[in-house]
Length: 97
Image 1 (cartoon, rainbow, N blue to C red):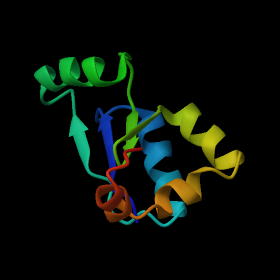
Image 2 (cartoon, rainbow, N blue to C red):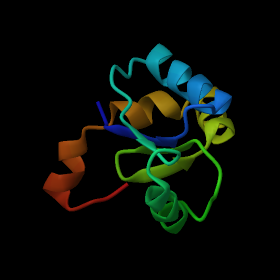
Image 3 (spheres, rainbow, N blue to C red):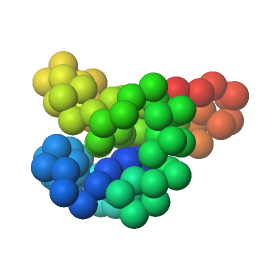
Image 4 (cartoon, rainbow, N blue to C red):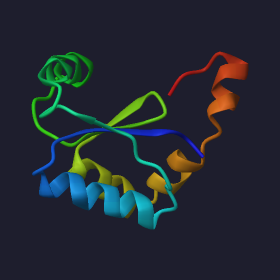
């Protein structure tokens, strides 16, 4: 399963919803970068994503966006294949997400 990373804050209801959706789709671990506890990481998030709001979600190296973007991926049937992607397959071929 692809690794998931989420930029979040403690008081973000959309972060909670995003994590709930990811867990419902089989993700067992959702590491979080808490930009409320580490303000410098917010600058990192903005630089990586071009966005200021949380959550900002990465699946593997691919930035999928926020909660609304995650829901769209799920409704289109694209979330499960993205989560199922073998992270080693991209490394072996030199491909990136």
